[in-house]
Length: 441
Image (tube, rainbow, N blue to C red):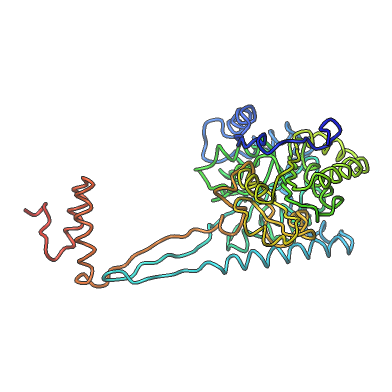
């Protein structure tokens, strides 16, 4: 197998790069700061609507003659109704499946309480109020991201859902209608994140408690800026897929999945881990053949992405699993004999797709689980977008019997003084039946 003839770079297991890159581009960060300063020149609490319109005109979010940034609900409904039956059925089906999965997630976590000395303690699960949802525009409109974000926020129980997407296509407007967005603002980039984080004065665009959704490098940079002022889902880097396969895999199917990922973006990565030399060569042959049949600009995008993609010949499936766990890919496909058994041994990934028929693209388009997933190795410690991004788990305690709580009071007095926090100890002593608070002596 000669790497000079391979579409996928041939890499040895020892040479696999595990570098986790900062998803925030330094240049984009400075540019995002400049845009956000333009929108709030004196650090005002909200974005000025006239300045947002100026920035939207300058950056091409809206036509020069446009005087509004809001896409009305009537426009969205008209877009939905203008779809042909096949398109509308597909959108309805995707909405239904994503909603069903998100509602099941919400029902999986409940309020709870337990007994504690002298009383009760527990937690409540409640949604944040306002959710900001971003859907990319640009080269390819992503109505699926509208559904993945807005429907999930609704299932969590958010009472207001604000959507932002630049130059929305008709299908994006239709998705906004079926997802039930309350406000749809037609801007993108850092300006959209600023509008949702701080709100826009004298409009229905109010400050959001959490902002979610994938976007370009300016969106990611802006999310890093507002993180803390409001919540965010994640800082997403380039998209990636990793396929673990053996000699039983169908080369044309694996090749199709690698190309599907590569056409996302010129910086996307498609990774192949395989135990069979011949299968790797066959997959690469299919990649070269199939990519020539792609239309433009998809073909050029995929070819460039494949320059940083690679294939690894592994000695065993155990080695495949070990490398995959170190990479922690956004999307992990398992196409082996007994795929489910192999899948159960994998630990780190954003989304898992088990077996030949569980194509990652089915997850992109609404099998149910969310397609907004952690990238760049962050799957080692976090998961994808879900209702939990919009939920707050808040704890409480109540003491009903002062007498029965004394063991807890005594423990608190001891621990506070071990930590050198005398004020803490005295506050506990104020609840004691056996200790006189030091401030009364």
